[in-house]
Length: 95
Ligand SMILES: [Zn+2]
Image (cartoon, rainbow, N blue to C red; front, side):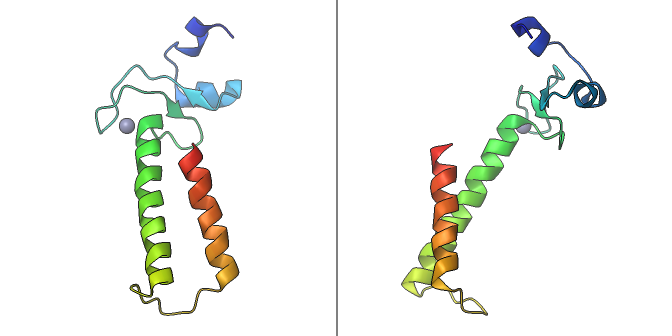
């Protein structure tokens, strides 16, 4: 696939049929980004990145709060689960 094919305007259904993970609408998203969209969800790639950052921030604040004992959760989170969550936050930080 050459670059002009990658940026050709197409419908989500067409992208799905062609097996492409992303597609280009040539239109602004609801938040005003001009970005490709994920075929699986129809979500704009920039919105997705922003949502991930918000989620990542909330998750790290939660983990920090649980560790510092400033956030009370209604159940005890086992230490190994906190380590798993930390791994996810690290993975998100790398992207
Ligand atoms: Zn967007």
